[in-house]
Structures are given as C-alpha cells and as structure tokens.
Image (tube, rainbow, N blue to C red; front, side, top):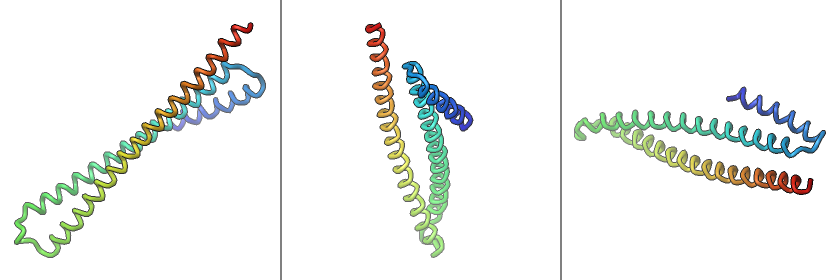
Length: 140
C-alpha cells in the first residue's frame, strides 16, 4: 500500500508540473482521479488499522470474560481478598474495553461521513469538468 501511495505521489507531482506548462482539462481530470485514488488508499489503510484494533479489543474482551467466568465458578463464600480484588480489576478492564469499543464505533461512523462528503465533492468537481468540456466543444 505504501509503495502505491508513493507511486501516486510521484505521478501527482508529474501531473502538477505538466498542468503548469499547459492548460488541459484531461490533465485536471487525471489529477483529480489520482487524488481520489490516493484518498481511497489512505482510507483503506485507516479501515485496516481499525479492524486490527477491533480484533485486538475483541480478543482482550474474550480473555477478560473468561477470567471473570472462571472466578464466578468459585463459590463466593470461598473468595479470598485477592479474588475480590481480581474481580474489581477484571470488571474495570471489561468497562474499559466497552468504552474503547464505543469509541471505535464512533470513529468508524465519522470516517463513513467523511468518505461520503469526499465522494460528493469528487462528483461535483468531475461534473464541473464535464460541463467545461461540453461548453468548449459547443464554442469550437
């Protein structure tokens, strides 16, 4: 993914230099498509990071739940002070994990909104470019 991003960056620099030398709507469209592809790769990378975080969180939650169940299998009257302390720690870890899960879900929703806004902007810019082309063809 990093190699592809570097390749897109190099191509973007080439297109920018070419656009400075000559005005061409096709170059602008290529440049916008390149930016769009780069943004999609960055978003995909972010999604993969979220997925890894989510998987780790789920694994940690499963471990904590297992430890809690193991502790609760022991009759409460047989609990030592260490067992009560462990219960408190495990419940805190469980709550922390649930809070992180909610935060991750919120981040995903925000990313989806951002992606939607970006797509709308891309469609608008592409539509403007197409309108410019059709006007130029009419004027020719």
